[in-house]
Image (spheres, helix red, strand yellow):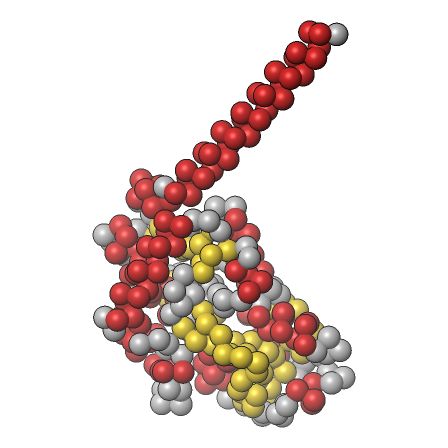
Length: 276
């Protein structure tokens, strides 16, 4: 009986020690995240592959867009070479999980900072401004009341999804995983309207005559920022300093001119989109 009791105590001590060791190892790994990235010699960044002009794959199979342009600069400043980067495609609803599981070091997939998301990931200094908008054929939907008794297209896990689910639960939502699926559904007449970031809608409307962002803003203006795994203070601090420096030196304006200005033209004021 005494042997059994002693063995149980020993087993408990051993298990506790292993748990503490595992937690310490995990904590140390988060503290040494930059060292791990440098040892790997590749920065893994989660971006969209189907959201032009922010993150998309071109005809040559290469990633392009505003978020991609900035991400390359992050790799250059951290590892000395903008090509030392691995772009990992993510869907909106999977962005948090990709950080939690360690599949990516940073999320740069048009990630809007919200209180709910701040509970599970850490956001760095924002580099972009955004509001929700609604696009419809010929701009037929001009206010929220006109969405009653009509389905509204949104992407799963986006701020549009959360906003309408919380504030307008009576509006039927048609939810899609990918942007390409959502916008195709709109073009095919599955719904009269689609809600998304207004910065994306302005660009899409330019490329698709006949569709108008007749509701350009909904709710409060929010910000888009890089995100890292919760508790990864080292990488977060580096990103905070990096984004601040890039903004001050005019790099964000350069990124805008290279990727967004050709799409927006003079219809959109850069100050309404980026920090500069």
